[in-house]
Length: 282
Image (tube, rainbow, N blue to C red; front, side, top):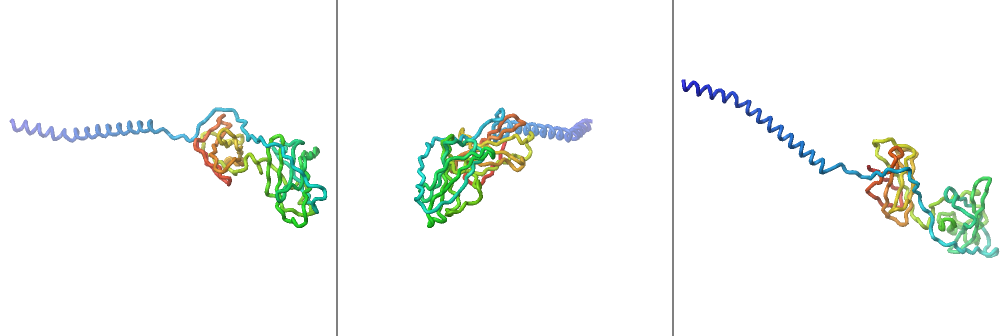
């Protein structure tokens, strides 16, 4: 009888043992899973998602390049009427902002071999809304193909613009058509002698709608150095950015009309006076 009872107890233990082992495994798995979830949650708390830009609520900024400088008006002296054998005629037209800043105190001169060969003042063609300078450049016949340099002084901006990409001297010839050579602000600037053609590309799928009222501004320190707009929002914002020297650190600020504010990208980039592309990150 005693043997039978012992054997019965052994059989019960053997029968219950697999269930106990299974329950232990379930508790262990739940404990590990819970611990892993807590560890992952703690890790997420410790390592938040990295943000590449800072958002500032704002109306659309009126940031723009400040072209004013501190250059004094030049005292150019044009040559006498019989000092050179011949002359070359050239017409220069001011465009855009440069035309808006022009005044009767502006001066334009052409230099060749370091010598002033003519001085001119602005002419306003009111019925065509044009500002032009008529230049009669003096020279000798043996100076054909001589290198010419244009100097334009804008009195309102107190800045001198120096343009080197002129045609060579051609005695007694009208160079091209009247008003053919355009002069735009930025080219030849002595305040910002370097310019970079820049394209800023936005991410493909932002959490808002891109609009044509969006604008990208480029800053160096607290100076606006360029305003970029887009004709195709998927191809980026393009424009010219100006700098005082090569390698200046620049900052991207992107204004979103829908978000009613602008993003400032934390990472800066260097202006290198060539064609550049910057991929914007939020």
